[in-house]
Length: 375
Ligand SMILES: Cc1ncc(COP(=O)(O)O)c(C=O)c1O
Image (cartoon, rainbow, N blue to C red; front, side, top):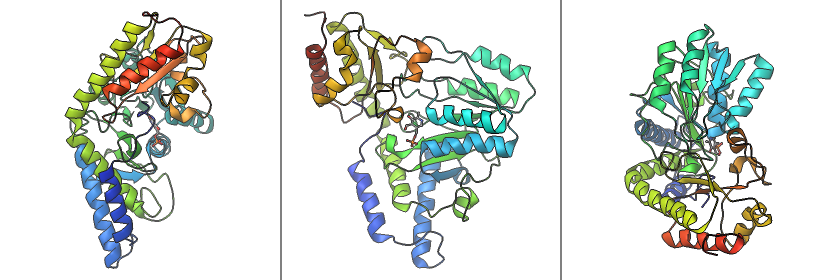
């Protein structure tokens, strides 16, 4: 139950990638037949990804994943579009927060963090005031779904505020690009970022949508690949795998939502029946349907919960996977509640989970933890 960290590659995606490795050895930049064949496949994949988010083909560029795409959006907006101020939130993924630290330090970019409420929603009235009060060229960077607590941003509302005040808008949509409808032809977004390994595609490949009005240059210099926007020979199997994965996920989006929401709600219900004094983070009813982040009352057993669940064969996480290795805690929960005494568990589910697994998780927790309601 850690599918927000990553997902296994769908067998149909593996077939697409295997075929790419076996049948298409050409360098997409070569002008001979093998090269042209590879190029055509990449452009077909671009069409699929662009179509999935309502973009034009010329606005989608392939990258190594969500982290690179975000670095490209934020750093190149400062470098190429004269952005002097960035407004964000303390709950963003580290790929945003650490970019902002770097920009502050190396470029003198002014960085402001919006207040967030107890459920992780940034204060949009504050955003409105900030956008109106300063003439500096501004970029707003706010994620669509928080990867730890699932809080969903009102993308349309933020996009409208940014448009009214002439600000650029970047949204990290890594957790939602395959699970919620995104349509940049209706929602004015400047930069949107996605990553294949979150939607049953391969690791190490992603994309960035760059609205045609925002002429940023390359983040990685070198050859003329990706129409001069991202140098380096393209990861053909990865790109084709990502397009296939996105296509599959979107084709099954609605049925998966109903199924996964049902599992997540059942897990939440069973936990409430079984334990006293649970604390939930975010807003499960209105947040991303795959996520449930809860903490149990402090106890020696709760402190070792992640490890004990792992021993029992249950994979969950404390914070986001990217900050782990050790259980490093969570900057998101620290910003929300600041209660280090309680250890939170992020359950993130997918269509690969079952109701039996939900039961197994609850029963295992009841064995590990002391005071359950039924005990
Ligand atoms: C919300 C969010 N943004 C960005 C990333 C980074 O994406 P990638 O692993 O493709 O670099 C992740 C997860 O890894 C994420 O959950």
